[in-house]
Length: 590
Image 1: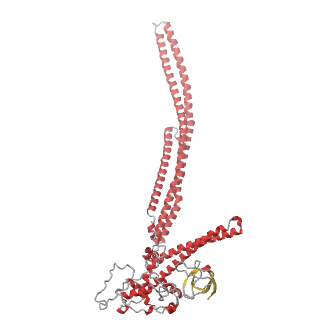
Image 2 (image 1 turned 180 degrees about the vertical axis):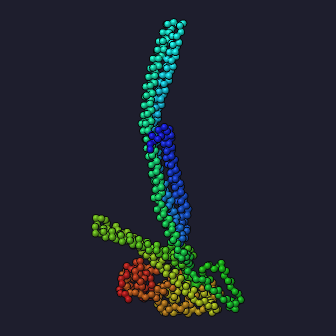
Image 3 (image 1 turned 180 degrees about the horizontal axis):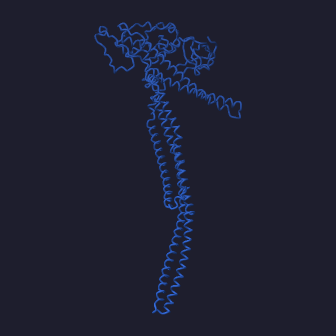
């Protein structure tokens, strides 16, 4: 099947067919370019969509829920899908468009070459036909002239009135014309033979060769176009597995949604730690002079809180005065949320302590290396860094200890709130209330209570336990005009105190904001000592929760090392606090 044989007379159609093939390649190339533009535009819009719905910093707490996490994962996967569409565009441009453009350039050059050759052959063939036509016309002309000359001669020769000279002249003219006609006839015959030979070669050899080249060129174009189209499909097929994995990621994220876990997170996020409001008290008109106190409205009671303020609840107000966060921010938090905030601070401090400890270990190893190999460096240059690191570690550990104490306070507060909620409420009587004046007196008395619950004067420090013989249980019941009075936070002084707590020497006075510290210290006093140790160096307490010691002093330790600090108790007065572990030497364990 050859164009040269089958289409020997369709040169112009073949020429147009090859030109249409080139234009088709250019059109397909433009199609792929437009497809790339669409892919890039689609990827751009996908990325804009992902950016639009990215979690805001103010919503970061919401994205702890599994459904929100699944949505965040979906956004990430969609962003990855956008990236794959960009890959499709890049590969189409680099592989398909580039190859088609190269093919078009090549086909145009080949086509121009073959068409130029074919046009030349066509021109030669047309020139041969013109020469043949010219020779034929020339022969025909002279043949007609020879015929006329011969006819004239014969006419004159048969006429008796014509002279012999005229007849001879006509004869010579006819003879000359006949010779010229014969010569033109021979030229026409030669030209005809030459033209026929060229025509045979033109249609059997010259033009079929050109047609064959054009056919091969067009078939090569079609083959290359098929390969390019296959690459077009393969380019997208290559990213389908990746897009499939992205879709699998979205499916896995959807399957990871856990309603129960989200419900638990809601509890963790919003739980206040308070107990439901208690019953409204019974107000006896005979005891209150005929005036009923105003019942608080629902709007005046914060949801999730008790209407009656208790000692434990009010103690929370002063817990975080030394916190790095704003006291107003922390005081506005319910107990559970404060506990959560404290835990975050603890985790942050623990990471900082670990980082500083690792730095100290590295500097210690470097100092040892410099000591063993002085040529590597000066060991004394590391000492200043070690000292600075030690100060940072001490500061961090003190902060860590403070936050640990705050955590214990909140935990104890929550425990007390739950204990109060479990109690059976009783109908208040005049004997169980307190008067405003007596509460004022109790406020003054409570401001001089030791952390163990012992009454003491503002100047009593280091005095013997015998100086305080009055226990909190000796205060008689009093009345209060309202159960919502803030001064009711001191009602806990009527609770009995243990003899052990009354016999211990207080370390310092207790203010209203420190009342809970005293309660916590009383709890620590009940802890069992696990051993006895001796102070190797003196230590001056400069922060809340630490305890001063003297060199050689014997004290009990209540815990093992905790971040470089050990919880200890002085046997002489029961004072409890933290001291540096490195300052102690264990004498024995119980």
